[in-house]
Image 1 (cartoon, one colour):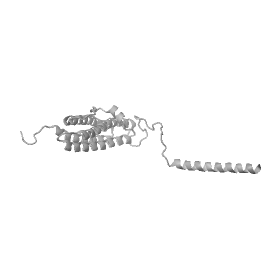
Image 2 (cartoon, helix red, strand yellow):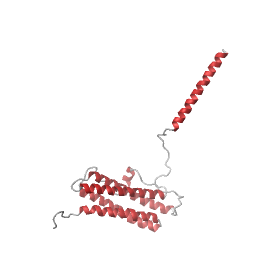
Image 3 (cartoon, rainbow, N blue to C red):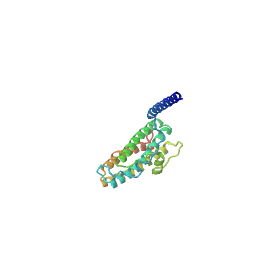
Amino acid sequence: MRQRSITEGSRGADMNHVSNGRAKRDQRFTHGQPVLGQRAREIQPYGEISRRLPVGLDENVRRASVEALNQTLADTTVLRDMYKKHHWQVTGPTFYSLHLLFDKHYQEQAELVDMIAERIQSLGGVSIAMAQDVAEMTKLSRPPRGREEVPVQISRLLEGHQTILEEARKSATQAAQRGDDGTNDLFVSNVIRTNEAQAWFISEHLIETPLTHAE
């Protein structure tokens, strides 16, 4: 009986040893795998400004700039995507030139989106990001899903440029008055100049001129 008890005890110890070894191997394997399905509270809600950001600007100044920048960011995001839509859907005799021009303008607007968003973050704000939030916030009119004629496509783009330029000029002036030179420079050097140049390029396609015989 005593021998049997010792044998059963040894067997139990061996089983525990095997189980512990397997658990350790499983643990090591788990460490090399992604932990999925995680959720937590936001670390900074939209609309809140970091209070202790050492950039030499008061919180109220940064808050006003972030609000203006987020509006321009939403509108610029929509204009960027409108350029890509028209790049895909453009048709007619000017297809090739406009197909390339629309894509060039799309890339320039995409660079603006990144610059504006990073300026917002550098001021301690939270940049608008998701499509559904942008759609709720933008001041630009939404085009239909279908294909439109070239003059309509260009007219929509020009209206978008005008909306952004009007807001950007006002925001640039207000940023300068608040002493936020960085935001003022972004509006003037990047947003305004880029949109002015693009509006000039595409508006020329709406001027009716003879191609072969002068009038």
